[in-house]
Length: 200
Ligand SMILES: C[S@@+](CC[C@H](N)C(=O)[O-])C[C@H]1O[C@@H](n2cnc3c(N)ncnc32)[C@H](O)[C@@H]1O
Image (cartoon, rainbow, N blue to C red; front, side, top):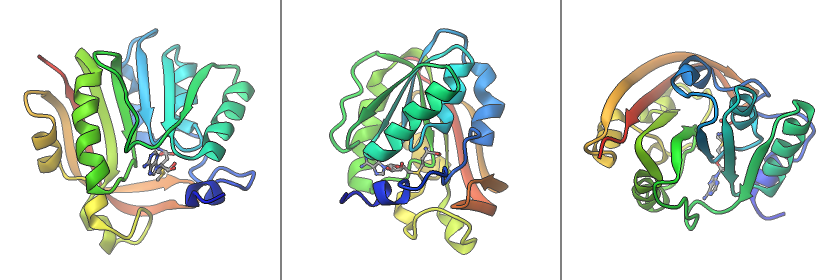
């Protein structure tokens, strides 16, 4: 077990809980039944299983095999189907014009992985498809209520607008939110939210 996330996920409890991310739950009305959704850095499956329960066709990808196994167990318990892929997002190929939505919740990645991944995710989204994202903002370092100790792994609206040029921005927010999502994301936080649609 040399993936630190495998160790983190190795207990029976779910470190981010089994409830979906609150922002995703509030925004899920934008996704119609039957659409194909990719949840990147999906962890233990709380978001993918929630979306599958709404009737969406969901794939979760994460480098942690322990996390993806727990996602499958959660899906079984909830009587929903989720496709899980164990892969490093540094290399993962999400395809071309493949997804109706990409969901990225607290998917904090180092810049050399994040930048080319976003390029691939842009192409992997169908025209008309959505990106739904909530990450910590670099100011989260002042809050100490979750997230990596590295501001370069966090996201800003300015950076997202640059990474998704020509996309129609439907929602953007940088600011405080009380995040109560398991023991590792707990308390008043500073987040970035971004929803955009591929237009061309
Ligand atoms: C903060 S957790 C978020 C999990 C999930 N999105 C949630 O909100 O419950 C970050 C996740 O990113 C995954 N991760 C980190 N680096 C990765 C990489 N290079 N490739 C794939 N997954 C990665 C970790 O395994 C972990 O599950």
